[in-house]
Length: 209
Ligand code: T5A
Image (cartoon, rainbow, N blue to C red; front, side, top):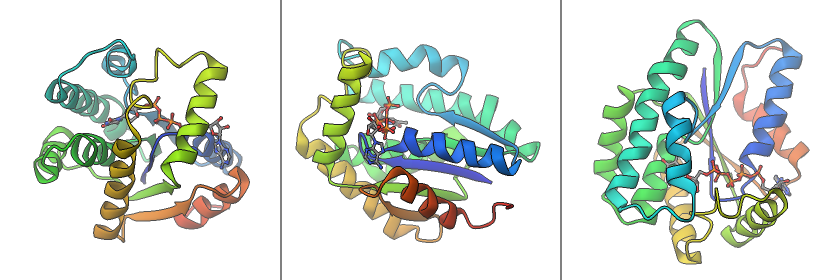
């Protein structure tokens, strides 16, 4: 089972991933926890280029770096894990490219859909948990966390974008959820982490007890 967690900045994806990972361990479910960008060796090198505020990337260069990371990540980590029967729990994946580079930066979303298909060999998640909340709340959370953890420069390039950029991204995620209702579950990210975990487990359904 391939599960992705998506959402705008500061939606609480990492927090939910931590709680889900603990729950999977408790239930003895074999799983791999990973993320994009940066879930494989190549991605670890690309991540600073993509997220540091001092990077001045052309939009197309940014797009192809995310896609290169994804292609290698699928080949090195995601497909091998699925083939040996493990669950894969991934923080961001192809939907982020369509939401950020498509809806956010204004690139053609159908072209991005095809490029994602090509980069992943057609591998889409079985279930996508979309953590939805007003972008201002998410940004406030992300900026406070970056300040506390000293990440404002090294990981703050997208947080620094204008509010309208983030609003387009939220809309994009919600449109995708409406287009693929069998794959997506939209969760209210204003709820407490514990309530969100319960919602996520319900949305995943078939976990052993
Ligand atoms: N990107 C990525 C693209 O543009 N295209 C792509 O194709 C891909 C894959 C990645 C960036 O790259 C962009 C999108 C991103 O901008 P990243 O560092 O991996 O950046 O970070 P994000 O995935 O964006 O993670 P966020 O910074 O948005 O944070 P999270 O993981 O959503 O939130 P989290 O869990 O760290 O929580 C943030 C703060 O809120 C609190 C936490 O304690 C924390 O302080 N919090 C809550 N508070 C109240 N209620 C809750 N339910 C809470 N959950 C968490």
